[in-house]
Length: 441
Image 1 (tube, one colour):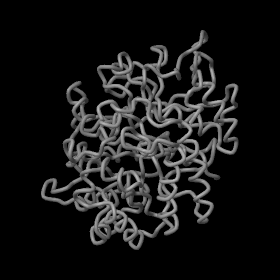
Image 2 (tube, one colour):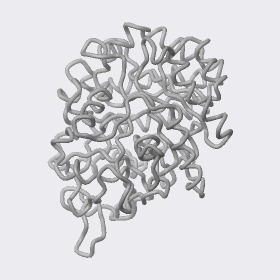
Image 3 (tube, rainbow, N blue to C red):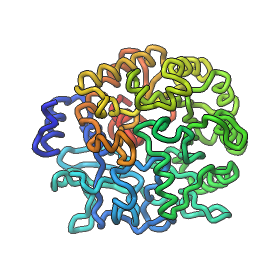
């Protein structure tokens, strides 16, 4: 833990690069940007507000805010949107191509700025460390649905265009302090976009999703978009008379009937009973993400009170294993939120303890052929854990997690999961953690 007291972020990062030379350096910087955010000079912001004008693909706020401030606190970055992602290359660390999801933090030691020649770079503690590329505005974003809605609002793409992200239910029925996951700002993100007057559809009609996908299919001539994810908040009762499996499943059924085989279909939902999971499969879903969020029993009960109350940790895990009988173990990919294990006041106080706990979870699932993935925790300030832990988890935790993750995969002879694009440093496009950057191609 001593490295946390390094005088500058540069010193901290270089210490970890020296101590963990087998972890790709690209992943070290990417994790630091994801956990702590990045600032943008006005010179690095587009003039793109809500509409798809300009040359740069703007941040779509596809489900969570993934920012270290509320929209009113972000200044120019709220009015002139930052890019959805950035790609890092070169610099003194000779970084291979690294795609990073943008999480805005005006006080970050990392800053994207243009030099005197107008060339964008990433600066750490004032020193340029990488060249920065921005995602071009895709042709399909320049078209609107018949009702005037933008494709970006209905069917944004992330991971450098690889994944169509369909948040078809913008809020979560786990609501309030006694039910909401303590690190999740889905409900606040909905409220802040509505308060700002931005278009932010609560329940996206199936017809709108199909219309947006038709535009993507028409104008994505390179077929860069390869997969779609259906997701949104948990459904504990019904939406429009449908339970969770039927609500999300209706979209998959419609997409697969209209565009058979065009995309790899994925759904992020709760860990549902086996019969409900079978309905997903019958509707045409190929990959199921029943996220387990955090492994430790005590932390799951504290941080996911709604999930504990409605399903319970043990039953959640049983259902994940059962779902592997429906989809096959390789196609069940539960997510966890990497870093909340160390969130005060309840989390582990040492990196050793946190890594031991998380690795226990990895071994549990990987021993059954199931390969979890993770999202790097962004401590959003409107969440209880974000308020209490504005710095997130220490960078050392994230680096050692990458080490443990790769080692556990190797132990059980597993390879990179399907539906995430290419693996390996310089090749990966998965942007909200470095797990794909840190495993071999």
